[in-house]
Image (tube, rainbow, N blue to C red):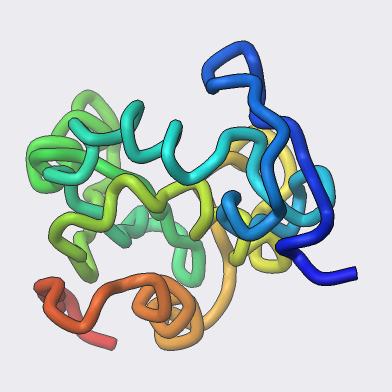
Length: 151
């Protein structure tokens, strides 16, 4: 059975609640039937504000090999907020303009790299190059990528 023939209901909590073909949903390793809970149309509506946000890759200066991948309209301010009153600096390695709305999908794609435990939601361990390749695979060809730190 193809994705167009298999049906899935869009979440009624934050979505339309309609029964739709699988190809109406973004893929996600952790989702039911390998798809997100909400259909693409509902996600676009809910995330229209997020299309102006960046996706960033940063790290804690005291913990090599661990990277925080998240979204923000102001990634440098976010780094400053995270390091405030702590004895470390957040190092911004890359910024992907307009990719913040795909944060959840990217986190799903990076699940094998996810750090288990207290920082598991947005923290990943692995090669910076490998992580950036996964993130970049979600970018549109015209999206701006800024490499800030050294690879």
